[in-house]
Image (cartoon, rainbow, N blue to C red; front, side, top):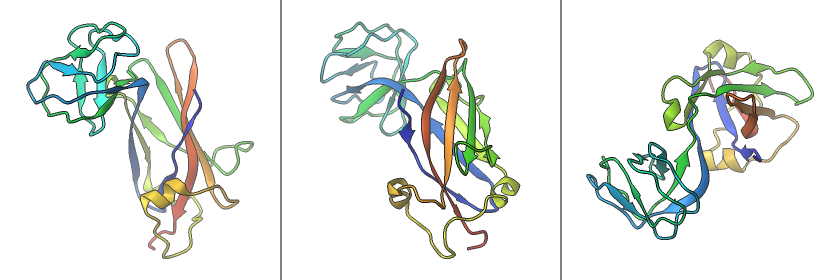
Length: 196
Protein backbone atom coordinates (compact mmCIF):
# COMPACT_ATOMS: atom_id res chain seq x y z
CA UNK A 1 0.00 0.00 0.00
CA UNK A 2 1.43 3.33 -1.08
CA UNK A 3 0.87 5.94 1.67
CA UNK A 4 -1.65 8.64 0.88
CA UNK A 5 -0.47 12.18 1.54
CA UNK A 6 -2.45 13.97 4.26
CA UNK A 7 -1.02 17.14 5.78
CA UNK A 8 -1.85 18.30 9.31
CA UNK A 9 -2.29 21.78 10.81
CA UNK A 10 -1.73 21.72 14.57
CA UNK A 11 -2.29 24.86 16.67
CA UNK A 12 0.59 25.12 19.12
CA UNK A 13 -0.40 24.77 22.79
CA UNK A 14 -3.88 23.29 22.20
CA UNK A 15 -5.39 19.85 22.58
CA UNK A 16 -5.45 18.32 19.10
CA UNK A 17 -7.70 15.49 17.92
CA UNK A 18 -8.23 14.01 14.49
CA UNK A 19 -10.67 11.22 13.58
CA UNK A 20 -9.65 9.16 10.56
CA UNK A 21 -11.82 6.67 8.65
CA UNK A 22 -10.26 3.84 6.67
CA UNK A 23 -11.67 1.97 3.70
CA UNK A 24 -10.22 -0.53 1.27
CA UNK A 25 -10.79 -1.94 -2.18
CA UNK A 26 -12.36 -0.52 -5.27
CA UNK A 27 -15.02 2.18 -5.40
CA UNK A 28 -18.64 1.01 -5.51
CA UNK A 29 -21.01 3.33 -7.36
CA UNK A 30 -24.72 3.39 -6.55
CA UNK A 31 -27.72 4.96 -8.25
CA UNK A 32 -29.19 5.73 -4.83
CA UNK A 33 -31.50 4.28 -2.18
CA UNK A 34 -33.93 5.72 0.36
CA UNK A 35 -33.87 5.39 4.14
CA UNK A 36 -35.44 2.06 5.11
CA UNK A 37 -34.32 0.30 1.92
CA UNK A 38 -32.65 -3.09 2.27
CA UNK A 39 -31.03 -3.11 -1.15
CA UNK A 40 -28.54 -0.71 -2.70
CA UNK A 41 -28.40 -0.90 -6.51
CA UNK A 42 -24.97 -0.60 -8.10
CA UNK A 43 -24.33 1.17 -11.41
CA UNK A 44 -21.65 -1.35 -12.40
CA UNK A 45 -20.83 -4.95 -11.43
CA UNK A 46 -19.28 -5.44 -7.99
CA UNK A 47 -15.48 -5.61 -8.56
CA UNK A 48 -14.84 -7.91 -5.58
CA UNK A 49 -16.94 -10.22 -3.43
CA UNK A 50 -18.15 -8.95 -0.05
CA UNK A 51 -19.15 -11.01 3.01
CA UNK A 52 -22.23 -10.76 5.17
CA UNK A 53 -21.42 -8.29 7.95
CA UNK A 54 -19.01 -6.27 5.79
CA UNK A 55 -19.62 -2.54 5.94
CA UNK A 56 -19.59 0.01 3.13
CA UNK A 57 -18.87 3.67 3.85
CA UNK A 58 -20.41 6.29 1.57
CA UNK A 59 -19.21 9.81 0.75
CA UNK A 60 -21.24 11.55 3.44
CA UNK A 61 -19.86 9.24 6.13
CA UNK A 62 -22.91 6.96 6.32
CA UNK A 63 -22.16 3.26 6.76
CA UNK A 64 -24.32 0.39 5.46
CA UNK A 65 -23.90 -3.17 6.79
CA UNK A 66 -24.35 -6.10 4.41
CA UNK A 67 -26.99 -8.57 5.66
CA UNK A 68 -26.06 -11.07 2.91
CA UNK A 69 -22.85 -11.84 1.05
CA UNK A 70 -22.47 -10.22 -2.38
CA UNK A 71 -20.73 -12.18 -5.13
CA UNK A 72 -18.23 -10.81 -7.61
CA UNK A 73 -20.25 -9.13 -10.38
CA UNK A 74 -23.35 -8.53 -8.24
CA UNK A 75 -25.47 -5.52 -9.28
CA UNK A 76 -26.86 -4.74 -5.80
CA UNK A 77 -26.00 -5.03 -2.11
CA UNK A 78 -28.43 -6.51 0.42
CA UNK A 79 -28.08 -4.49 3.60
CA UNK A 80 -29.65 -3.94 7.00
CA UNK A 81 -32.40 -1.29 6.67
CA UNK A 82 -30.76 2.01 5.75
CA UNK A 83 -31.00 4.81 8.31
CA UNK A 84 -30.23 7.43 5.66
CA UNK A 85 -30.82 8.29 2.01
CA UNK A 86 -28.02 7.54 -0.44
CA UNK A 87 -27.86 9.69 -3.54
CA UNK A 88 -25.73 8.83 -6.57
CA UNK A 89 -22.69 8.25 -4.41
CA UNK A 90 -19.50 6.28 -4.28
CA UNK A 91 -18.78 3.91 -1.42
CA UNK A 92 -15.91 1.67 -0.36
CA UNK A 93 -15.60 -1.31 1.95
CA UNK A 94 -14.76 -0.28 5.52
CA UNK A 95 -11.40 -1.55 6.79
CA UNK A 96 -12.24 -3.30 10.08
CA UNK A 97 -9.51 -2.18 12.50
CA UNK A 98 -10.58 -4.46 15.36
CA UNK A 99 -7.41 -6.58 15.30
CA UNK A 100 -5.03 -3.71 14.46
CA UNK A 101 -2.67 -1.61 16.52
CA UNK A 102 -1.67 1.90 15.49
CA UNK A 103 1.32 4.19 15.92
CA UNK A 104 1.64 7.77 14.67
CA UNK A 105 4.65 10.02 15.13
CA UNK A 106 5.96 13.43 14.07
CA UNK A 107 9.56 13.81 12.89
CA UNK A 108 11.84 16.65 11.90
CA UNK A 109 13.50 14.15 9.60
CA UNK A 110 12.70 10.47 9.17
CA UNK A 111 16.33 9.57 9.93
CA UNK A 112 15.98 11.11 13.42
CA UNK A 113 13.96 10.17 16.51
CA UNK A 114 10.34 11.30 16.69
CA UNK A 115 9.70 14.72 18.26
CA UNK A 116 6.09 13.83 19.21
CA UNK A 117 3.98 10.70 19.44
CA UNK A 118 0.20 10.77 18.99
CA UNK A 119 -2.04 8.84 21.33
CA UNK A 120 -3.94 6.42 19.09
CA UNK A 121 -7.48 5.31 19.99
CA UNK A 122 -8.78 2.24 18.18
CA UNK A 123 -11.43 1.47 20.81
CA UNK A 124 -14.19 3.92 19.83
CA UNK A 125 -15.39 2.34 16.54
CA UNK A 126 -12.75 -0.02 15.10
CA UNK A 127 -15.31 -2.12 13.16
CA UNK A 128 -16.32 1.12 11.39
CA UNK A 129 -12.70 1.79 10.39
CA UNK A 130 -12.32 4.69 12.85
CA UNK A 131 -9.05 5.76 14.45
CA UNK A 132 -8.61 8.84 16.64
CA UNK A 133 -5.23 10.58 16.95
CA UNK A 134 -4.63 13.04 19.77
CA UNK A 135 -1.92 15.29 21.17
CA UNK A 136 -2.24 17.04 24.52
CA UNK A 137 -1.84 20.81 24.81
CA UNK A 138 1.55 20.19 26.43
CA UNK A 139 2.70 18.05 23.49
CA UNK A 140 1.59 20.60 20.89
CA UNK A 141 3.19 23.44 22.93
CA UNK A 142 6.51 21.58 22.67
CA UNK A 143 6.34 21.61 18.85
CA UNK A 144 8.20 24.66 17.53
CA UNK A 145 5.90 26.73 15.32
CA UNK A 146 6.78 26.59 11.63
CA UNK A 147 4.18 29.09 10.42
CA UNK A 148 4.59 32.83 10.74
CA UNK A 149 2.42 34.67 13.26
CA UNK A 150 -0.96 35.56 11.78
CA UNK A 151 -0.80 32.88 9.06
CA UNK A 152 -3.96 30.75 9.07
CA UNK A 153 -4.03 28.54 5.95
CA UNK A 154 -7.29 27.01 4.76
CA UNK A 155 -7.68 23.23 4.64
CA UNK A 156 -7.14 23.35 0.86
CA UNK A 157 -3.91 25.32 1.37
CA UNK A 158 -2.74 22.87 4.04
CA UNK A 159 -3.39 19.87 1.77
CA UNK A 160 -1.71 21.46 -1.27
CA UNK A 161 1.39 22.42 0.72
CA UNK A 162 4.70 21.08 -0.58
CA UNK A 163 7.66 20.20 1.59
CA UNK A 164 10.12 22.85 2.72
CA UNK A 165 12.91 22.66 5.25
CA UNK A 166 10.76 24.18 8.00
CA UNK A 167 8.01 21.54 8.05
CA UNK A 168 7.79 18.37 10.02
CA UNK A 169 6.75 14.96 8.73
CA UNK A 170 4.22 12.60 10.26
CA UNK A 171 3.56 8.93 9.56
CA UNK A 172 0.84 6.52 10.60
CA UNK A 173 1.48 2.79 10.85
CA UNK A 174 -1.24 0.16 11.28
CA UNK A 175 -0.18 -3.36 12.27
CA UNK A 176 -2.57 -6.27 11.77
CA UNK A 177 -2.84 -9.41 13.94
CA UNK A 178 -0.24 -11.23 11.80
CA UNK A 179 2.29 -8.42 12.21
CA UNK A 180 1.88 -6.97 8.71
CA UNK A 181 2.63 -3.23 8.88
CA UNK A 182 0.66 -0.84 6.66
CA UNK A 183 1.55 2.82 6.26
CA UNK A 184 -1.72 4.29 4.92
CA UNK A 185 -1.05 7.98 5.65
CA UNK A 186 1.84 10.37 5.90
CA UNK A 187 2.39 14.03 5.26
CA UNK A 188 3.64 17.39 6.45
CA UNK A 189 2.88 18.93 9.83
CA UNK A 190 2.29 22.67 10.02
CA UNK A 191 2.34 24.18 13.52
CA UNK A 192 0.71 27.57 14.05
CA UNK A 193 2.18 29.90 16.68
CA UNK A 194 0.58 29.65 20.15
CA UNK A 195 -1.88 32.45 20.77
CA UNK A 196 -1.72 33.64 17.16
